[in-house]
Image 1: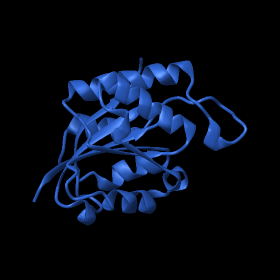
Image 2: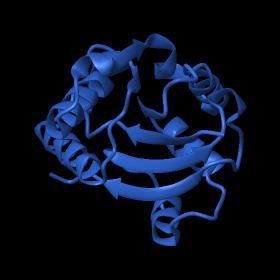
Image 3: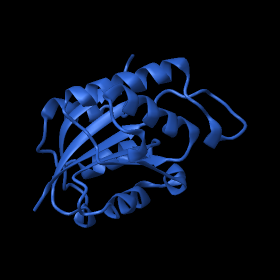
Image 4: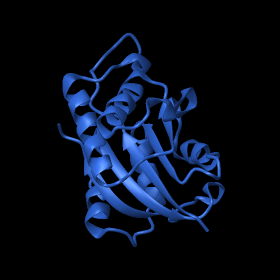
Length: 170
């Protein structure tokens, strides 16, 4: 099997309203928090080969801020309209469609889906402090890093080990 890294990110702090929910953009704090999360990921040695990002304004801006702060290429991202309204099962299905050659995948989406997915995937055998922090909630700019030994197509409940959890606060 191949050891893979999965990074689940909840978008950073967004404005309270916009013409549509899809169009809500990041606040100034949100931009700073996302950038800080990117710095943290780079410090952890995480560098995705592919990023699956909800096409909503606040998630695309979160990706851009994280990637720039971490020194990653912006074109690693695919913006997916379906991830915006996806529930946990749909988000997991999208992850399972990841090409086999990808070993590090970053997903940026929305709650409750991202927080629920993180809890669903956690095997309980990983970093205890990270697991406990993640269980307390998944706030904006929350980042969970998982290690998974297997093919993306086989990813299922309780199959990944949390190795880190961080909340970006710039």
